[in-house]
Length: 354
Image 1 (cartoon, rainbow, N blue to C red):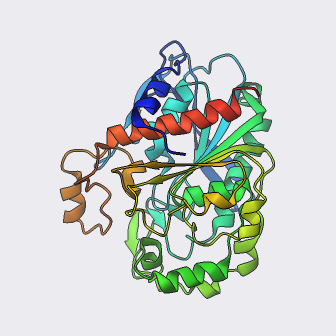
Image 2: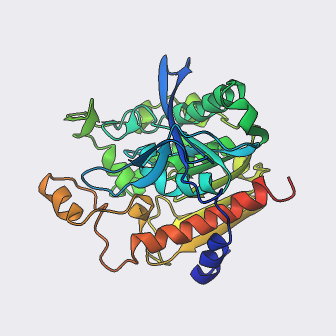
């Protein structure tokens, strides 16, 4: 599926916000028996706009988004969308899409995944995709049983949205199962891919400080856990952007995915890294759609960078070109296209005819 930017912009413009109010946002703590600790979860929702005006996700590098903290939720029952951020990112950094979905009538909830979030990220924790999937399933259970949220959530209309490693998480919840041997072969063949370089060790983060870590031998990963089914039957729709593990899902599991699934790749033809390239992957999935966002790159799903951010990141030795946008469209334009594609899928699968 290839959709033009003009069509997507028109589609997005046609989606009404709730009385023009900013998205409501609340931070909640959800107990996770699997983690042995509480999950830090941010919930975005249609609001009456009567909360504290805030800018969420803003920091030294990124621009933030306006929201209404602890605002009163609009009356009604809304679809729930689980949001999974990329490795080393944060749920607050996905506010550019979460606030727009909330303004259009969705409740969006996402955690900062322990072990793979900004300031708390190590190679050893990164492949534990089953932990991330469990985080989202735990959130579904908690919110749909919480008297504060249960009256506003339509538990029959639950979707998942994931970016990069979060895309792998969304794939797993939809029914895909990872193949450890395939992933090991991939990193042997493509050792210079970003994820495989990360496993070479030397660098990680804990308590918001850099730490020295050893090389991760992928053969030491718990194969049974890595390859287990994390399908959550409560998920009825999925949108995946640049999924990690794209080269390492079991084909039979892909054929068994029975919910609407849209995969989006960031980048022009020939420039999408093999680590996330999904045009062949999508052909193995029934009822799947594929879209490609031209003149973008893998980091385009991150927030808009502030002026001078690229130079700042270079000055502190950050190896990832997350704010280098030479030859790419403006990130604001890329976000508009992504918002349209994502909104189109969830409007169709979580609202229309449901």
